[in-house]
Image (cartoon, rainbow, N blue to C red; front, top):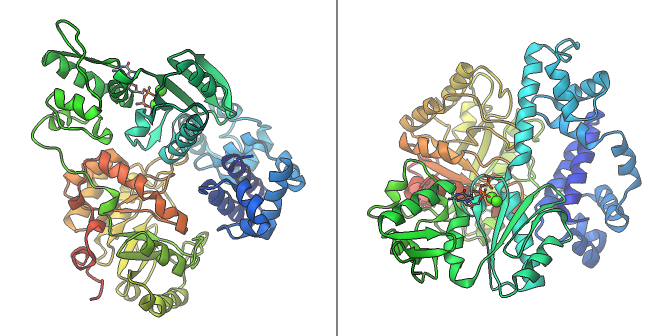
Length: 575
Ligand code: DGT
Ligand code: CA
Ligand code: CA
């Protein structure tokens, strides 16, 4: 059982407890699942070398859960978990996770309609069988239908981070077992799109047959869609499709360009090549008249031959901006090394997995010069939000440890934007916080006009600095707030409020097209991890990818500024 399989199982245990109305356990199992999912190392390996102690040291895993995990690792089964899951099938979990359904409604639907799959639920909704149930109306029925559609779509496209990890493990496997000369992932993954349909991998090898055989017989392959000497496709046992292409060395650069896409970028660049007297294909760059190959050993040299600057994969989309990539100079896109700090992090004070001190230490080790500690506010009960007393205790702790660190620790909070747009701490407290991040965590389905009013009121609060994960979507689970974003961007821009680009794999929020729109309205951004443990600082790269796809430079992102200049945007930071 590998980490992903184990994490999925732990999540199902959480679902099962949730369906039964058990308190606390669902959150505990979800925390453990999250922790396992984010591990770099194989859990089995940790257990082998460090025993149960190694497991308990991991964030979110206590003794009881560790014991179940060991049983699973050793035997593939756990008596308690097996009997629990008998009552809750995979489909039940899926029904429960539909947007707006939740455990209580799911339980009722499953019992009263005797459901065993999402397809049956869909049929029931289409036949009007849901609206007649007590507590469900016509509106709920149509909401459920919409949620099912989104779920089915979400199944097709997966979060970038999950697919990146998947592709890296396949590349590692192929490197270990087949020794390719060159190997890269391409497609939407290389363009760092927020969701990825399938994984495309390109190789150059002297033994394509052997490599293809290694690929199609990898242990995680569920079935093979195609098997050839230059092209194979498989579906892994988690449903992810992987396409592999093998090309000769002289075609590698052109093939990488081709399979990186996007399709629309390819079409434009090919047309441009034609206009300049060339033929560009996945096999190489040739003269148009006599088809003579022009040696190009990198994508850069192909672009150069066509009179273009190197276009980073993130910009290879069509956004009415292709022409911009062909003229003068391209912007220097923001990159990880530009960031001076993270302005959205959680600790064990609220729902984080690592202590305040551990978070600060890791941020310092990463070379940051500041970190904002932004635990949840009082109303966020599920997230263990901080009462005023506990918030003040946190300030005290920050003051006590500050001298131990070179990095500056900013006192912040992720403050709930309540239904009426008020912020969840009194003004005299907000005024003492160096960083106030406002966030919507409930009532996502209010009418658009009320949502806009709610957000506007929050953005007009003099103490609100940053709007966290502005669209509130969860990839594949909850769609973005249904509002006219331009209105929000306008209010943010004219009041100097910062929009967050949240790097959590399931959020990736704002989405790139919204970032482009917001920037055109004059908004500045802040790329944060919203990290709930020291291992989550590594998520920053995902947010950077989104920012780059939206053409952001260092100047658009406030956390590239040194502390002294950051005060321009966060004026309550003391000297
Ligand atoms: P995805 O998988 O839906 O997230 O998106 P992509 O962009 O990875 O698309 P995919 O996997 O269908 O194809 C990989 C790349 O191969 C694509 O970005 C560009 C190239 N490609 C595929 N089909 C065509 C085509 O019909 N024409 C051109 N010009 N390029 C194509
Ligand atoms: Ca793809
Ligand atoms: Ca593909």
